[in-house]
Length: 357
Image 1 (cartoon, rainbow, N blue to C red):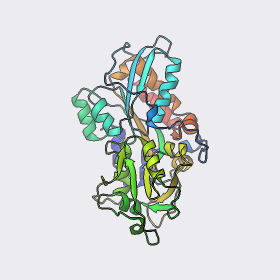
Image 2 (image 1 turned 60 degrees about the vertical axis):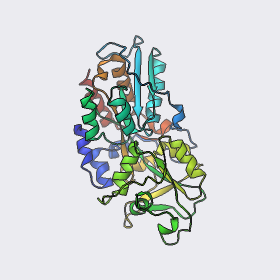
Image 3 (image 1 turned 120 degrees about the vertical axis):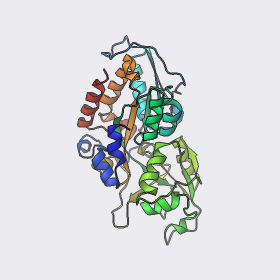
Image 4 (image 1 turned 180 degrees about the horizontal axis):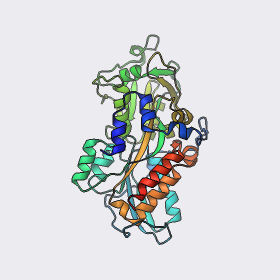
């Protein structure tokens, strides 16, 4: 595991997670965000159907070493991984290709784990997005194939729990109540979650087990108190977050979770639920400002992992340089719906990237 991942993996509580990892650059980012909650859905964090469809073959075009980003750049860059990170990478790919039309940047939403296992670690993609840190076993798998992941934290997210718009009984849930719903030995009816909730079947829609969002939710919410509990398989799993939104929208007892960008784009379709770790805490609504300030309990960092060898190709290096610089701008919040990197994180990322020039 990378040094950054080791630091993140030791965390216990959500708040400790936020502040010790720099998960969303809490204080540094608060000043650069332009709050976009309540927007009319101008996010580009749309369905995964917008994917450019990453290829299975890793391009060897382009010479080694870094570049000044001139028009002479050419080649192919293959991105895979997290559906949560997908909107960021897809946006970066489109913007980069406008500046460098001879570079083909493909983006495929495979899930964080699915991307590492099936594409990145086997050497079939150059960059993998992840909504949680790379795991030790994934690093070992990559290294066994001669692939060395390099970690860059690029944004922050307010993981959002949502219910049907006609659900008038849920405004806030504790981590224990969400765990009751989503764990393997959980409840089947809303009346079992809390006294006063109606006798309405719970219909769950969420990410597949290959998703980093699935992994994060299991570790930080279902197992929030350190209990050895598993995520239920009794839900409709998918790597396409727009299908989670659709499932919730079509079922009055529906519930699901996904990255904030997808909620931002679908605020009229589903209802966001405020959350709190315990009964003693205040309820916190999902939002970029709250995530940046570290006051939202389900805030989390988002990552991209280029292959160290791929960074030796000038088109990949230039794309990562472009990506890391743009990740610190307001476009991440205004156009996509995530927390942008703070200036300190941008500087740290670019300095780290220079090591591979």
